[in-house]
Length: 147
Image (cartoon, rainbow, N blue to C red; front, side, top):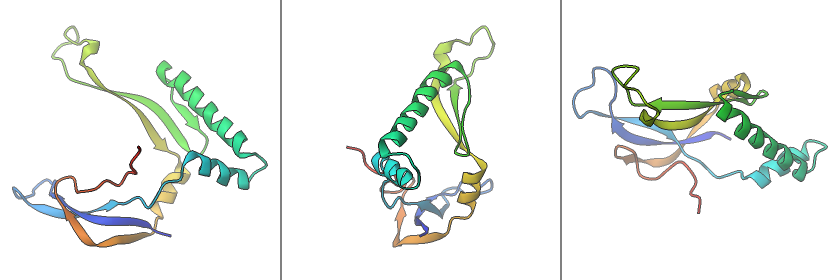
C-alpha cells in the first residue's frame, strides 16, 4: 500500500518568487486511524504478550515521559525515536529584560529513530483524488476528527 497524497495550491514560498505566485504541493492524506486498542492487538498477535500487557507497557512509557520531560531530559524509546521538551519565546533586547512571561510555546518534540527515517524515505506514493484543492491552507484536514 502507498501513502496517499492530494494536491493543494499554496503561495510560492521560494526565495525569488513573484508576488502572488502559487504552486501545487503534495499533502499527505490519512486513510484511517489505528487506535490504541488495535495497536495493542497487532503487537500482541506477534508476541507472547497479551493486548493488556502491551497497553500496560505503553502506559509505562507515558508515565516515564511525564516524569522525565519536565526535568529537561530527552527520552529515547529504542528504535522508535526520541522525545524532548521544547520552548519558544519572544525576544528581549537584554538578559535583564527577559522574563519567563516571554515564553509562549511549550511543546514536546518527537524525533524518529534511524529505522523510521529510512522507512519514510522508502514510502511509495499514490495520488488520492483526481481533483485539486485551492487555498492557503487547503480545505479539509489530513488529521482524523476526534469527537
